[in-house]
Each structure stands twice: as C-alpha cells, then as structure tokens.
Image (cartoon, rainbow, N blue to C red; front, top):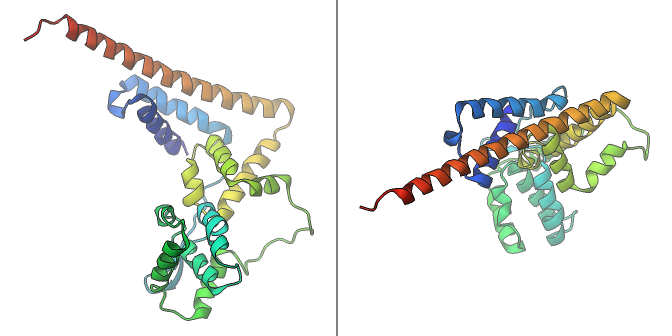
Amino acid sequence: MGGAILKRELRDLEERYGASVGDLTTDELERLVLACRKVERPFSNVNMALVERPVRVCEGAYLWPITAGAQIWLEEFAAEWWKPDSMMYKWARVYALAHAREPEAFASLQDKSSARKAVVKTLLRFACHGAELQDAIDRCYGIGEQVAPEKPGKKRKSEVRAQTDFASLVARLEVESGIPSGSWLWRRSLVQTMKAYVELHEFAAAFAGGERARMKDELDEAMNDLARLKRDIHVRLMAEKAKRAEKAGEEPAG
C-alpha cells in the first residue's frame, strides 16, 4: 500500500504545486517515502490484497467480477433504458462485466443509442452457448458459492452504511488505505471493495478506549507530518523561483 500512497502524493505535488520527482532533493524524497509509510502503518494489518482473476467464457472472451464503477453504470443508466428482466439489460450486464475494469468503456455511454451499439459490438466476441455465458455471469456475481448463512434481516451496520453511497465508501477507503478511489471503483470487484470497507471498520472497532484513540492519533499525526512536508517542499521551490527571478532582473540586458 505504501507504493500507492507515494504515487498519490507525488501526483498531488505535481498537480497542486507543479513539483515533479526531479524537483525534490534526495532528503525530501527520502522523507516523503518515510511519511507515506507512516500513514500506511495504522491499517497495515488489514488484508486487502485479494487476488481476482477474470472468468473465461470462450476463446478470447472473458468476464470480470462486477466492480463498483460498472455497477453504478448498470444502476444509473442501463436500468433506466431497459427493464431489469429484459434481454437487452442482460446483454448490458455482460458488457458491464466484460469491461468492468475499463472506466473509459463507460465514459461515452450516456445515451441509449450509443450504449446499444457498444453492447452489441461486445456481444459479438462471445461465440458460446447461452448456458456457458450464464454460468460465467453467475460466477462473476458469486452465485452458487458457499456462503455462511445469515439471520434474515440482520446486516452489520457497516455493510448497510457502505451500500448506501459508493462515493462516500470509496473516498473513505482511499483515506484509510492510501489506495486511490479509482482503484476501488474499477480495479477491484464490488465484493472485494465492500469486504475491505467492512474489514477496515471492524479492525478499527476492535480497538477499545485508549488503544483505538491512539491508533486514530497516530494516523492524524502521520497525515499532519505528510502535509507539513509537502508544504515545506512548496515553500522551498517558491523561494528558489523568486531568487531566480530576482537574479534575472538584476543581470544587465543583452
């Protein structure tokens, strides 16, 4: 996770302050790496590195476990255009699973006509029997897997809270894990994202009283240290830029 945090902070330095890796001193880069590791530490025991593989349908055609981003498209767009029990919606689901980890595959599909064309084009890749395709769809959604029985109507509060707002869910995961929100939306399945959310909150809840407060304090301290370091880098770069401008103004023309 530290690598993900470091990439995020380097990207933020470049976007916010125009500071690339090459602009940092060796000492600043080392301090940045250590600061990112410190941010990671409070939640480093949470296992979110679940390996997921695509489901092979036929030669050259695969489906992925549904991601949060693809599910959002299905709910907010496809479900508005086609009835959930219609064949076209089923094909839209196939499209969502086939492109579950490709955010660009959904960016332009905001009207029914373009969506239909894209869905049909994807379906042409699946030269298989309907039963084979349905089996692959079921596997992507985890249907048929052995799951521990739960009491009817009993859901953990964290699961209910997570299901209400994907934007808040992935934003919280980004802050607490250091993994960018886009990764939670498009690079991990919806099941994995939900599982990570629940595990993070259960991990935090396992700490009672002073221990939990201490963990939160450590994270706050780490985030503050990181923010101060980025500010110091910005101040140094601005001071050097001002000196260069002053020196250029003092030099005689031509």
